[in-house]
Image (tube, rainbow, N blue to C red):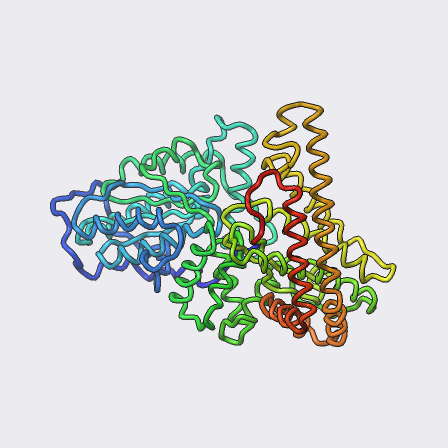
Length: 555
């Protein structure tokens, strides 16, 4: 799921009227530390550098990025106990939206409690008069450090690569171009809608800025420098290696980490959330970073009129991935074909999920929501969520391939002579999965644990092709049998959706609601119960017939 960047509660705090002096000692610090500032300290006029907004942030309350948080908590603990910081400079790396600045906000909040102030600047701030502004920033920090209990302060430069770009005389053409692009982007000033950005940076001044920064890093006394960067590849090598400690901030690795981040955002922003919604979001927001998760919560709050509900969170995810629902304009026969196509995916995925309920390693991606209203370029969409699947087994591949092929099968069954180009992308995806399973994962029955591309054997290539054909044939048969079994349900459901043509709210269903309706239909008659059991047995036998091993199949 693609989650875009957030601009929620991340705006910088207004610049203070003057440097705020520490409120006084909180804990005792080690005495006798004599800071040696980069320049002789003089009274300074009003500060041009804003303070980070730290309200509601703490390292303890943040979710995700446990290794980096633990490292920064160690720094806070050391300063609280009066010790010297383990490192005088930290470089926090990670993609945009991964939570780098949030970490620094939380660190600044925790440090403030022990009398250590954090001074913030953006790398783009130094595109003009860079050397002077850098010296000014470090001076301000030294002034505050002298008044602090431990005579310590922190300097934070966000997107520091903009102030420490690759030296043009020594960089390759590609690196210089990359650095130039990064510099232009860094000047967007928080994505304020500027259509064009023209860097005003002089190469000679940029070099002086870099030289000043590296010099200050060596002569920063007892200041702690923290740089955050999403483009370390455009940063001067000498400058990057001067940082004593590097911390990596990554996209959340799974549902549990996303859940911890969601909970921390809800707590910090004091959001009202229905029970179970965060758990569902954590499973559905595959690949989302903290910035994207916050955006999703904010949008869900708007759609839920101030409260985050299951429906509003689901709609927020759909809008992010596919767009806002649009009125249906296709003729009934075409729209009915679309509905049946999507239901083909749904019933196959539902059946495999039910068969694998006691086998997490075999579970396909679950159904989060289904929109039968047009969104963006799509006439309808099945929105999937992640699962706890720890391993992509043979059964998992079969479930995913069968589900992808079921759209074409359903169109052939319900189309009454009409078919569309819709199955094209499904077929491509299914073919790629089969190729991966057979040729890369050792799941070919006759090929076995051999990669034909590496072996260079014509016989291995023939075995791989044969295994792929058998895999596709079995998956297609499973899709056909399943779609046929749920034929009456699909026909009735398509008629219901057609009757709601003008009511967009009724054209989006949660995966849970739709699967509950399927289960009620399955149990409605003894014939359906018996038929479903027979269908599951047939599928297990089909899968077992082409498995490359004797491991247990679906139970």
